[in-house]
Length: 216
Image (cartoon, rainbow, N blue to C red; front, side, top):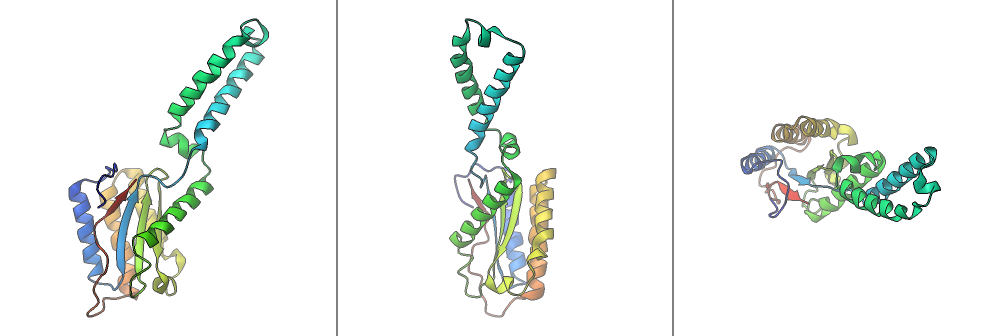
């Protein structure tokens, strides 16, 4: 586990249990399995300006339709105060993860999660195992998305959609708040495929830590 992370969806006991599950799975396969949970992957700096623009536009439209004196009278000079206050309100609201998801296209969220997962796959050494059988279960909380990435030996042997059920299980955990239960189920589901196609090899030592990786 990476220290200093603000992710708190799992207790210390649950993190320890998931690490044990990874160890149990790896006893039956030559694959190296890792679980990573990150706070977010997508960049959403556009949300602030989008909210601000929308608030200003709606305010202007309302005042225009009602022939308000703020536009058509002598109090036009109040507009700068209104615009500034809405800028501050929009800045506050832009921290809402719900609004970040709503105001960012699903396609952008999807691609940014995949990009972060690919970077972490290499950063965590999953592309450097001697047998090329590293597998990363990657969960990004803000976007409520999950990705399973596998190294060359696995990709060359298994169809790309084989991990779809594993991802569905993780997403179910996110929706129901059953993180520990569903993550364990997903790890075992992943292990079933690895054990079938990449059984344990005599003398093969697993090269990576079993600890759950937590990152912002």
